[in-house]
Image (cartoon, rainbow, N blue to C red; front, side, top):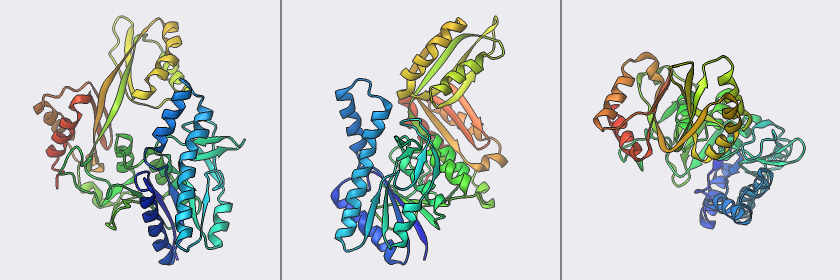
Length: 403
């Protein structure tokens, strides 16, 4: 008997028929002799609908109340999924994040998991129940409802798998696995059989929507092997695990794109110790996640510092930085309409010429590079969002990733 954690995304439970299909899959897993914990997201479109409702009654709803509202999306799905299983003659129980023992910090809308005490979860499993857990949510030690940010159901599943020492964690979604690029952008993209945690983390943080990056970080930290696979067929998916020797033979594993980016530039920053610290401490205090950072060469005692972030966070970043900019006597400019293109692969550690090949491919397409960022296994560039599809196709072709 294995202990299995499964996660189903919003499209997999997008309507009553799909919920019943998921219920049948869960039952099949239990009938194979396994204990099953299933984490579900809100039905597709529900979260966006709740956000729209909130904005119709308030231009600036408090984050606390947004969490209370958004948590209801997953609670609807867990109840419906448990009902479907019970109607099929099997025993299921629905649990909110709090009931499943998920305790978080107090950052509303982007909370981090502090610990999990799955006592109630284990009791239900011992009683022969299938447990249906609400993803994306938890509760602070003081009892406040919190949410984990977009894609937080992935994190819920990985964290629960770690807490209950599950034998496997299966992330069911609307695609067959992780592809070399988004097939909607690059039609000849192919499925990858296995990825290392580091490659998956870089692809997730670079715009691949298959997995939330925080969930991959958690899986790596606690050694949770997981599989990304489709809820609409029985095809094998993509296994994500510790790096193996053979993985380095492939120089570039995949191409990721991230749209809806914005660039903020702090102008005329005094070239003195402590100024950059003041700027980025302000960003951190506002709980904003930034990505690419570039500092220009100092001239006449000042410099410019640019960084990218999600376009939706731009107003919050500007509001946080305005007092600091006035204090240091600088300026602030912002630009949206940009996107990030990344090529990822642990084979970059032992192969040269990756950057040259990427830049050459973009040059052939007449695509201008605005910013460049690198890590040991990733090269990322910031370009105009209007050119991102063309850039992805050029990079994918240059590295021979097509089917």
